Structures are given as C-alpha cells and as structure tokens.
Length: 331
Image (cartoon, rainbow, N blue to C red; front, top):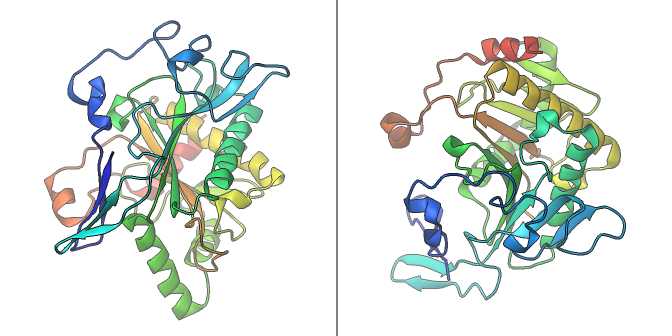
C-alpha cells in the first residue's frame, strides 16, 4: 500500500510508493519496448494491460480486444491505489494517510508512432472527450479532491514507454502547486474583482507579443514569466474554471489549437521531449470566478540544477517574446 506523507513546513504531500519501486525501469536502463509484440499498448496486446476502463472503438467490438482507437486502462504500476480507505492519522507532529487514489493510462492511438501532430483532428478531440469522461466518472468518488491529467513524451520527460499515451492521477488532496495558483488568483480577484487569467488573455491578445496562435475559443501563448524555454500555455478565452465543462464547439477548437501548437513545437524544436499538464479546479469546488483551467506545455530543453531546486527561481535563457515569434513562424 502506498503512503502519503505531509511536509509540515510547506504543506506539500509526498507519495511513498512501494509499488512503483517494482518497475524495472526505475532502477535499471532497460530498452524501451518497440511496436508490435513487445509493446503492451499496441493492438493485439490488450491482455498485457489491466482490463480497460473505457474504450472508443468500432461498432460491435469486444471488450479488451482490438478494433479500438483509444483505450483507458489502470496503470500497471500505480503511484496510488484505488482500493481501501484513507485512514488519516498523526505520527507525533507528522500527518500521513494511506496512498489512496486512481492512476490511469490513456492510450491515445493504436499506432505506435502516431503523435498528436500526425493524428486526424477528430482523434485528438476524442482524447479530450476521454479526459472529460474520466474526470466526470472519478469525481463521484468522495475520497478524491483533485485530478491531474498529464503527458510525458520521451525518456527525458519521464516516459517509460514510447507508444503515445497520457495519464491521469486522482489524489485525496489538492496539490500545493494548484493551491498556489488558486491563492494567487483569489488575491487578485479580491483586489481587482476580476480574474487574473482573463486579464492576462486580454492584455496578451492586445499586445500580441507573446501569442503563438488563437481561434474562436482558445489562445496559445508564452507566459510573461516562463520557467522554461518555450513553455507554452493554452487557455480558454471565455472564463471557465472546470475543464469538464467542455462542450462540443470548445472541444473542436481545443483539438485544433492543441494540434497546431504541438506541430509548431515539433518543427521548431526538432521534436523535443516534453511534458504537458492540465491544471483544473478541485473536484468539489463550484464554478470559481477567480480560477481559469489551462494547459501548460513544457519542452525539455534545459535542466533544473541546484540554484533552481534551492530557491524556486528558474533561469530561462529564452525570452518569451522571442519564443513566441519563433513558434509563430514554424510551419
């Protein structure tokens, strides 16, 4: 059973995950499985994964068989365990609880080498619908407070399999990083009675210095103070605090701008490893006037070293204005 432990100084929770320690890739350099028989995510290898939770496939398809174009399965080596109770307790001054949560893998395509820039638009839209479906389903579990959706591409970004996939982890608390964003948004709102993200979008669209792309519903931009070179955010133009509020017109436009941005990053930066995350509101919160869900895309072009770890400062050698222009011109 994994265990969650709370840092008493800054309130950060840490997962002590014994199950993850059983992964061969955690402690040794194993070659990545290639397409076909060795890849557990390729069609025909459905028995190599835990039974699917969700699948989009051809009419008449049998469960856990081929003829799918998207599958969601439990992570075989979960960071958190879905069975059990939280059992919150103290250990002297320290707080801990059982490592309860959900950890799922969304296999984005049956094609072992088809990343987002190469996918049909409607398949990217299906990925977004699957994210939404899983959030709506998991938020019924009263043990969960937050769901993070993320994608790691490439070994340098933490991916252990090369087949295109993203992941979802539900946690019994709201992560510190999200709480910081929400606190900053609320302080801005309390002072100005406006959403900081909405103001950011308006100013960026007016100045057009850091905008990479936009359409009717979304804008992609380089944030004013990026932590990493070519860090790119995608935000809904209309205020919305919950990703799962996504409707068909928005999903259509989000799939298009996500594909466009990922294509530009691939072309301009020579297909780098990257992480992307969806920062959403906590599951039990009502619509929030001060928070705005968004996607953060972070190509792995630089390394975090002692200064960054020790201070929380980030050294970014690429001004966001130059990064935006470089990506905007990439075709």
